Amino acid sequence: MAVVSPERGWPGVRGTLLRAALFCLGCCLLLPAGASSMGVATPPHRRFEYKYSFKGPHLVQGDGTVPFWLHVGNAIPSADQIRITPSLKSQKGSVWTKNKSVFEYWEIEVTFRVTGRGRIGADGLAIWFTEGQGLEGPVFGAADNWNGVGIFFDSFDNDGKKNNPAIVVVGNNGKLLYDHQNDGSTQALASCQRDFRNKPYPVRAKITYYQKTLTVAINNGFTPDKEDYEFCAKVEEMILPSQGYFGISAATGGLADDHDVLSFLTFQLTEPGKEAPTPDPEMPEKDKEKYQEEFEHFQQELDKKKEEFQKDHPDMQGQPDDLYETVSDRELRQIFEGQNRIHLEIKQLNRQLDMILDEQRRYVSAVTEEIAKRGAGLPSQQGQVSEQELDTIVKTQEEVLRQVNEMRNSMGDTLRLVSGIQHPGSAGGVYETTQHFNDIKEHLHIVKRDIEHLVQRNMPSTEKPKCPELPPFPSCLATAHFFIFVAVQTVLFIGYIMYRSQQEAAAKKFF
Image 1 (cartoon, rainbow, N blue to C red):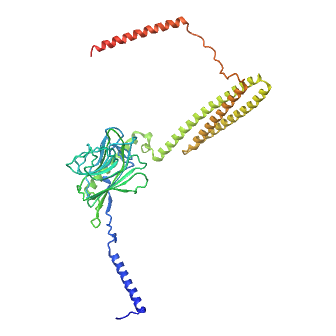
Image 2: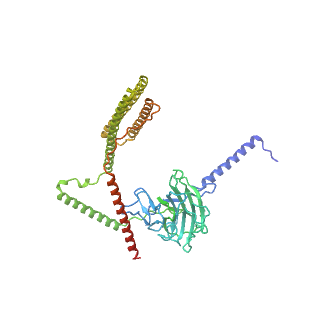
Image 3: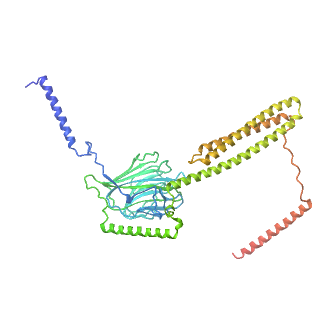
């Protein structure tokens, strides 16, 4: 047996390890791009499909329709969202794509809000992919016997198992009726319990259909992070129509929620290695020439009408182009309107402040005179005490007057500032004005408490403070006249009652 010396054996071992490492590195480099040693599949190619999507702002056209979408029932489109159903009883609404999809695999991202005042809501919202448009029906506002799949966000617990709100995936081949009484539990392919009502942020649902597998992921609406999704449900070996309509519907019952959809984004998925999706075909040359001719004709007609208008209205040269205000002009106008409103409010506050100041002065003078009169008839010791307290009250009143004058001056400064300001910003002035009024209120309470204390000390212990008596009101009606008037009123009342009873008896004869 040959023995390998340490001097020769160790370099041989190192060479063997080096060759093995190089071999492994070469195998890794020969793997396809995007594939890993753990067998993770390459993600599909995603392409945004604008004809099957909608998103605010400027969601609605001038005629109230949504481009490429059809809304029916009680659905209300607006500039930034579509309210599928309002929070009224027994409402149904839905929106559907006008055209069928032309791709096999897809992914949709839906952002929505379900809000209501009650602890329990109804009925819920549904996201659809069906062979036909289910415009109206009993299944969350859409038609039954659909051919495709529906992802139901069910708010109301019909079966009483206390497992709602829930998200349920229900498939149909066009022959099954939805099981409302059991909330579709007998037909559900997959489900999960998630509370999607009254969340601080919009709820997001990502539904992916790829390689005959349907996956549902949910963003629960507790965070502003748009990509914070969690797994909800998965259905494998699911066969869906190769072409279909996307839709979303909602319904209310005895209970009601607002079902608002903020966006519906659709993406086409293509398997890696296949031919990438081709863009839309270009417009034929004949159509291009036709549209170009129509545009030139329209431009000529517009120029002619402009010339005719200028001839008929020579005093309005250059004004037709300025009939509509620009965005900057509109913002400037809104700023000046807001400043005018602030100016009027401050004027009104200044007038009220003048009234308060006059009332305060009259009140101080009246209290001072009353205390001086009462203090003159008391013993010298009590008179000295009343003079000290009177000085305190007068000083307090002077402080109040000084504060009111300062407030008036600050109001005048604010008024002048608002008159010459060029940008909005009045929160600080409003806060200072409120603080001044609170100070005045506090000083008035102090004055009232001091006056009451002073009056109680100046009066004897056995006497109680009394308000000045009002002069007797002159009697304008004698006793005999009063009794005659009461008798006449009684007779008239009895006669009216008898007349009403006769009328009711006569009316009963016709029934």
